[in-house]
Image 1 (cartoon, rainbow over the protein chains, first blue to last red):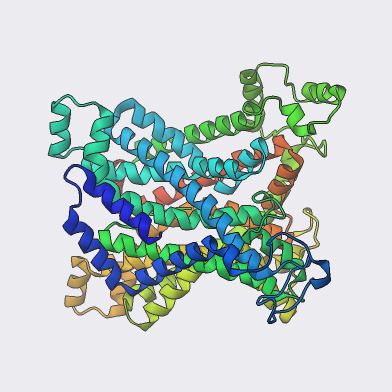
Image 2 (cartoon, rainbow over the protein chains, first blue to last red):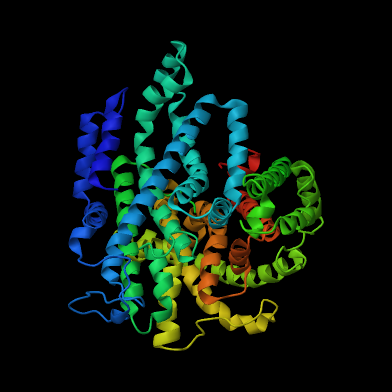
Length: 303
Length: 319
């Protein structure tokens, strides 16, 4: 997660209710800045965001135009990471590939976490048959392997960024629901929630004003952690040929395209691999740093 | 105890049933007309009508579902739309091949992750921990297809020891497939180990700080004995759950890795089915995966009960 979004999460906490006040935010920031791994992680993610944003300025080449006379070149002065079988500059495609990876992953993670948080809070507050039924259904969703669920959704609705966002939301929201529900259950019996209930407030205002500010740290850690999973999942999907369509520059797709030429131009495969790995390492380190800074247990993770 | 086991079994059955309803609904109800979906937009009306007939699409979905589930219970998953053969036969063959990889992966990953996790936990914040945690982080951060691709680059191209691509048919005898499972197993083990190590490390650290460990130490018991007899059983409890969770991931990871090595397993079958829009095959794979997932979770819960007497009182397990 980059710095701006992390501040946003903090501000949300300050907004209302007995949330982490400015002092808590400062403590969090201090804890983050003191931890080298967390700073490395946030730095890596920020670097990826910048590279993707400024990709058009950083490279003179087009990510999609074929130049057959320059195919399969090794690394050199003109092409730092060489070219692929269609003569496209590998580094250019890696830089532009970051745009696809970041935008689609961010949108998908945001949707999954938002839906999961909403459902998790509501089910924790409502309880009763609603909770029982929802948890049953989510158990069933979790029993279907994520990649199979994704493939079924993509088969049914056709490939495309919007469908992938929807599919990832369906696959990952249930896991977010479980985590958020557990956190919200810890808050629900507290006095200020009971007081709000006694005032006759409805579920939604209680959720927004009393519960959400107090679990914002859990949600933020969940977001960072989930984001790393989503990047991996989406790139796997592209690798299998069900994500980004050629000639879209996408890291997973690039690895699968250039795999056959790996002996000739290893960097055409290694460059996107490096980009993917550094982004996910960055996300993982950020998630670790955030969970430590907030004292949120990050271990309860699943696939 | 018996009550608890019965209830867990019942809820497992409900979960599998619900999952099958959802999969059935997703592939049959969502997209306007399944027959058109399968054949593509420019299919002739006659072909669509014939397929609708073959798939019984003219009957209400609820009846079709009941028929289908009745078949599934008897082990009959219908007929593949592409090959026209019974899905069950093909599926069991591929499942057998995937089980080879899965069993080997779980064995390798669980062993190595417990060893590495305990080491990292015991040497917390010292160099063995730093090395293991860094490797773990990298293992967690690369997708399976990257590990598989790098392995091919290292062990099939640079130093050609193992085959990069499997040429065996799905029905090849197990002995023929054994050399082929080495690279897929390594690729999956790397990733799976990375996830489990984190869990083991954390729980070892938690347990080693516990009072009963201090007591055991104060009694003058050696470190090795304290770890093996006192700390490990408690430390493995949370790890069991993570392993069960990872089995669900394994089915997905297997799909990608089998694709890289062209290994004739369930993953390969699944991708083919998606390519060909072979819905009966997809449904069958989904139900079988759900059953595997639920059984693994059940086993993990029962294993946790065996390791932790406090869970045997019939108290509801954490989910």
